[in-house]
Length: 366
Image (tube, rainbow, N blue to C red; front, side, top):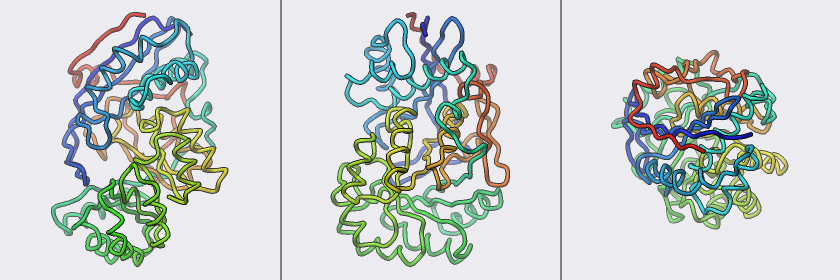
């Protein structure tokens, strides 16, 4: 496949409400989009990097610079998605930037052949169950109102963000208010240390699906130690940046569940490798989210339809984060989202909306 040009486009997407985690509060998304153009088609990829390096070392400006200076120039004259991965492999890190470029190439490739993302990845379902991530609130009553609203919309699983000082009380309140049958999990975003193990063990009383990334992202050994001291299943997120990391975590007993975020691991090809590895070892996986627009959400929903994704993901409907999405909105029906069936990611930006939220564009001729 010959690439004639690549566009990098920045858009500003205000959130419908502030989203607070243990590492900060987001009120808007500064999104970097990548569009790959070929003589036969075009493809889209979304870079999930935040505007600041808080979730990981990557950030939107840095991703744009890595793409501009190193990753895009490294692409061969003719390339497919697998060749893109090989061409980008010599460059260390920058997985979110690599994921955006590889996804755009794959989208263009599949659109040209008429194949959907879901079919290419090996999806086994036409719709996927959806959970929702609930940020840290100013008060427990505010939290309970938010959870009640999401349950009334039909979300089948609730995830609560936690941090020291906001953990036992909100979890207890949600359990007492909504009962033991609501699937409930928590996400610490690496906010604790192993010395907090006795405190974290108190979460065992609430029959949680999992506790996500309780400790530092670079310490699987201590996660393994924590997993032996609590009965709540440990799920890793930030610690898993590749299939090799997943294999190490499984071998160490650092987790029994993995949150697969394609952007974090360098793209959907690597995400599928992690899925296959985890499934072979009996480790559950689910698809995490990074507050994506419809472009990133479409690809995530396709991934979440693979057979090993046995837990509801953080895919969510468009309106969970954006009043107006840049694609036709993803809408929740009976707690599920439909998997796009069209060629490539199966959705296209609405040009008028895209132009309205665009803050800059850069065209790179090949």
